[in-house]
Length: 449
Image (cartoon, rainbow, N blue to C red; front, side):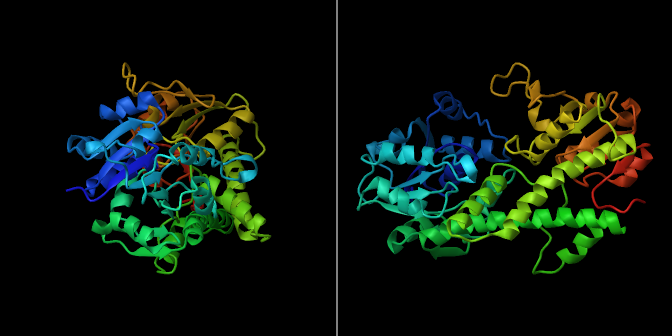
């Protein structure tokens, strides 16, 4: 027996993961999207998103009859369930991209609220799952203008590349609403997960999402700054982070240096929280420094590549061929939004370098229209084999932490290169393995052996 009838509006990585996982918990779920072609693909079990376990879960829940797909929010909330019943709980999982000045763009959310306002059954709970500014729950309630419909904030804390695992194994469930009964109805959806549940007001729940992501951004910027300091004083960042990570107040997570943080969440959320702070007349200097440190990290990587290839931080990269390994913002996803790899590629291209890139998530499948071969991304020509990226390169630059890069034939890669140099911006590769292959490996914050 199904516990609740749930409509999920939006089938991005948050919406589709939410729908499939809620169905796996026994709920009857209808996912709605405005993209007709995408809905047809989902009905056939074709998931465009590269997300471990998601495609299999969607197929399983569709086969079980607990998950279905429709075109348009109106169809999703009204009479889309067996026996023409309406949704009891409606999740809004819509894009809220960064708008002018860093403010979250809520037009997609507001458009769906307007579209469905008169269609919602009495007693429906509308849930903001999208990352939205403080006060959005109140604004949503105003737009609905329905005393018989409750609005709840239920932020997601999913990591791309492990979204299904994170949903089914949450650290906590956060539900914010000024009406206890509505909050408890939403919290009950997750009861089988047995996770700690935080019931609070809507504003606190909305701010909690920003607070979490911005804290993680600060941690990443901090470790990148520490890696640079390690290089200057002769310390090793791996040893430093191992030592501080054993402190339970700090923890091991988010202590790996890299080319900077990016993706669909952290850049947007840090700027959005700055806007919240500015509107409250609060100068959030720590957060602003976090963003500035991240921006500086990209140029620092370019300077490191320049020094490795030319021997000087001011050397010319004009017509220098560089192979880029990894272009997605992190491993385990095909997401290119605000990818630090692409930001660094743009700076290298501005410096005159000739670039070629390889990323296992972007190889595609010849003849498969659902996974077409991608020839280039943001002006970077793509190849289908990492050996092609190495051919004639004066350096290879590891920008995304794909595990497969550890098992490449580095002897053969070295033989194909013009200069045997690897700049490892993720500290992913074993320095000893590179040395045995005849390569000079340059990491971040590492003490040179």
